[in-house]
Length: 633
Ligand SMILES: Cc1cc2nc3c(=O)[nH]c(=O)nc-3n(C[C@H](O)[C@H](O)[C@H](O)COP(=O)(O)OP(=O)(O)OC[C@H]3O[C@@H](n4cnc5c(N)ncnc54)[C@H](O)[C@@H]3O)c2cc1C
Image (cartoon, rainbow, N blue to C red; front, side, top):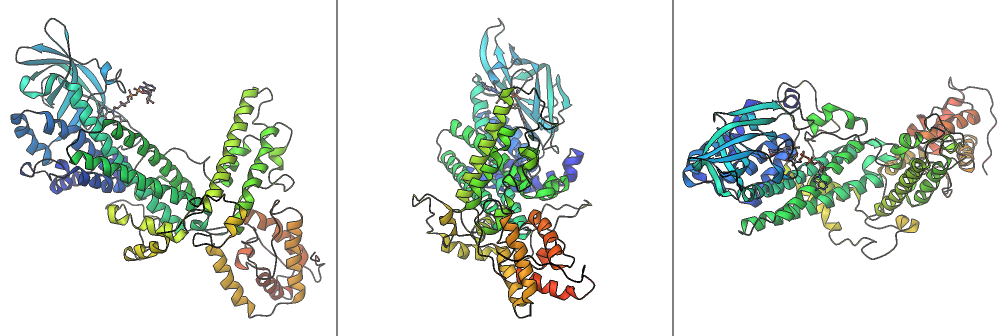
């Protein structure tokens, strides 16, 4: 779909194929070429389409919900007989023309006029942002009706064929997203519409509009659920494959929490959409308020999911190829100032020179840090004195902070940081209570049942799919396994369910939901392999001495110093990529051999590193003949 988006046009074979599959007549009677689907099935189709591409889902949604539905429910028999086979079979598209430059959210302000004339209506006015208008064979146009004396009669809904004299297609809107389908202005210059083409009763056109818009909103809710599932799939694929400092990205508590929250939002959204669809099928009145709520809440949640996805994919989230090839096409908001505390650093750094706010950053980080499991501690901001936040804590106003900035601005910054602190605290507390990584993965794997587990591929596009985001030949979790994997968690009661206040000791307590970083396991294997080899007491002492010195000098902030022994992994000690640079310099000076920061990943324990040092001390890596060790203590 990337090329379709670039070209602002759908490939003809897609439209032809959709028509062949009956997607343009989802609820139209079978005899007309439609599929006669129940609403509960229609929303499932919308979900699946949106998971593939939002543009395709919108095309089908606009045509079926806004285009076909008014005709099916409000047109006289003869009109239905004429148009339904054309529209349901996909030989013509249908559009819905309500919005005008001066009437959007408030449709009662429309200025298009339908003047009563002999045998019908003369319609004049201007519409804009009409989806599919210039591709459509027929448009439902809404106008304010007047009798020949100029008295208002209410609103009238009129079916206008695209070749009606006086109907002019206006310029196409250059939209930011869903660019492969057209949205354009329409002008009506004294268009004659016969009485036989009135939908519903003249004067009650707003009832026709409300029904179609309500139904379309339900469809948008379903569409959002499908797209959110796709976001979750991609987040899970990436997080399960990506190794970052401290271990697998999926094992980061914030990652698990975000995926878990998304999974909960999807479950709630899916339940709401399914319940509304069932209500429609039972013949009740369309619950307009609930449909509006589904649209508003779920589209907002979809935005959040897209933000989270962009955030989680790191640099890949910024690439258009990632979005067009792997994700549902949607306009992407810049989300880089959001996310985990570390990602907020650039934003916070811009506020350098505002001492009142800078002083809160370390306390925010400090209050969250003790609750984080071992090897993620290093990811949080460090307190004053560690060097990392000194620049921000400086009392000298920085170049980005004008001296005579109004006090309200500083107050605003303080509020934002308070909010950030509260979010970090709340997220870390919740992270201790959300399901284990494999359980979250298993849930996401379950989406394959409703939206498949595919890749967006089409012939002729030069860009390959990023392997980090592609579907796996061997899925992360096989379909058949995910039920079994979920079973142990089925009756899990979280600490919050039991009403307990989560705290540092809660996080550390072993439970089926507790956090076990994958990096730790990897490090343990490495240590076990090295344990068989010999290591000199002198080298081991030097390495351990450097680590203890790093702790004493505040390298890990105010985190409680853990028991440091030869086989504890550096990740578990909170030594992240930033910390490894000064530590490597320290080790180099103490051991007399070249030690780069990267080596701390290859030799992830004191014992492994000491063995490495032993191997180098007499070889070409030796920097000096003898060096002074740093005594532990
Ligand atoms: C992708 C897309 C497809 C569309 N397809 C169609 C289509 O097929 N047919 C069609 O007729 N129209 C279509 N539209 C137009 C759409 O119906 C209007 O954009 C929508 O009704 C909002 O109207 P507006 O753009 O004039 O915004 P405005 O009405 O100007 O609203 C501007 C802002 O004010 C807020 N606002 C509005 N009223 C209030 C209030 N009372 N109190 C507080 N805040 C308020 C709104 O939430 C919004 O944030 C489409 C629009 C989009 C984006």
